[in-house]
Length: 250
Image (cartoon, rainbow, N blue to C red):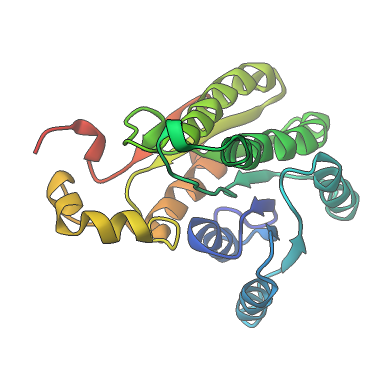
């Protein structure tokens, strides 16, 4: 197991891609703590499922927009574990709509959750990782950061910000042997993409060279690679996992 003896924190871990990341990191041998926003039932079910396999997993309720809460979760874990080896920032939301009809609250909620939440947990783990001179941060971006659709102004801006944060932070932390990368999924089979997939129907599959929707587990496998020592010389990168969608054309 590549991550045996490692510790990991995952935000947005109770559903979708975050849930798949929690499951994959635990299967690779890591101790995992994940953050969820409101669905305690889903979080408790995931903890019970993974603990039944012998995995060391725990859940914390938090709004990722709260920096103090991020530190209140991370700091005691650092004391308990002795190190924070991996951070996966997966928490994210969408509030799609045309800019002319978008409210300031819709703009702020997406930016503060997606980009602000990523900043908050990066802020919380940076000192622990620098002290130990090791660590891997993996941020969840999106192909929408470069290839946005109509109605995605707030979402695309948040994910573009994550790309910039990833590259800048990678430069800051590289001298301390802390790596920072991002994964940019395309169309993935999650609750968050359900509306878009329902509207687009089979058209979206025709646009994807691999002719299918991706699975959360396929994103999680890339995250696990970036978190592991197999990616020891890789930092500051945004890795697209989209079945070729970003290649364009039909």
